[in-house]
Structure formats: structure tokens, C-alpha cells
Length: 124
Image (cartoon, rainbow, N blue to C red):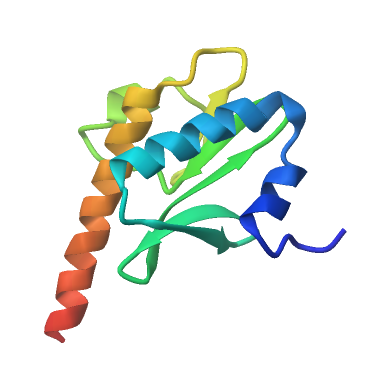
């Protein structure tokens, strides 16, 4: 199977079990970052602003994920410890309610980081 070339093609690859949760994640991101552009990167969906991707999402048979997650940041440490995932990933199991407030906080955090990087790059 070839890599998807559009968001629509990518969304068509997501298992039926996860598509509703993925749509909710996309809505949270779109509301929290209305100027962000949705696109594909690394073969998954993501949003970019200032020409840089700042958040990615994906869906699987048993969970959805967002990347990068601020696992090492003290403001998120306790909440994110409840979820599986790697150093920069958080997995939300499909058999539990989607923590939309947490996702929004992560999106705003990542957006702020992205804005700070854009300022630094402009200064160089």
C-alpha cells in the first residue's frame, strides 16, 4: 500500500474503531490553533504554523496518539503518567473517554513552543 498523499487519504486508512476519536482530536486542535494548517508528515496527520509542524495525530485499532507529548514537563507529568506511550508520545485508549481538555492543553503548549522557536529563527 502506498503512502497517503492527502489528509482524506490518510483518514481513510484509520481503523473504523478509531476514526471518531481522531476526528475529535482534529477538532480540538483546530479550535485551539485556528491559524494552523493541517497536512501530512511522517505518513500521519499533523498541524503546522509558521512553516513548522507542532502536533501530530494518528489512530489505531485500540488507541489514538498525539506527538510530541510533553512527557518530561512538570505541568503534564502526573496526567501523562496515566497513559502509555514513549518519550514523546501519548496513547489514548479507545475504551476510555478522550481527555479533550488535556489534549487542548498539550496543543496550546506545543503551539507556544512553536511560536518561541519562530521568534528565535527570525532573530538569527
